[in-house]
Image 1 (cartoon, rainbow, N blue to C red):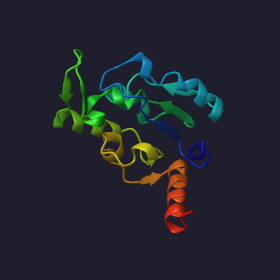
Image 2 (cartoon, helix red, strand yellow):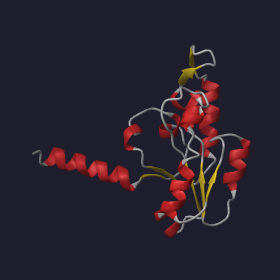
Image 3 (spheres, rainbow, N blue to C red):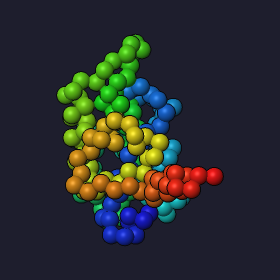
Image 4 (cartoon, one colour):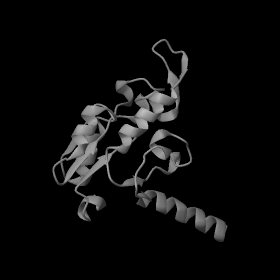
Length: 157
């Protein structure tokens, strides 16, 4: 909401839910979050059924002013964490080519990257370290967590 109220043309939200291990699972879809986001933001939210690829890139390339777009769960792709399981449940490692393509596609979805995911900020996941954006900032939740750490380290109780 802050971004839209302060000059952003649109907002593309990327996130993860659970541990689907690189496999699509309705149980871990972000689709139900649309209703909650719409209530909190007071604007319509467009849900895209994937988080990368030509259709997603096209939808995010020039959306209408004020648009909010929610991408499907990043962890539906093994390239997000670098590993996953195949359809038979066998462990697989994402190829370097798949990781690179995943990261390149994510990088095409916006001009500014805001990380507000404190719980995964330390991980080498593609959405944390692979989005090539000229401007990368932390969001308000991450700022708040860092302030708590600073207080705990500066004046422990």
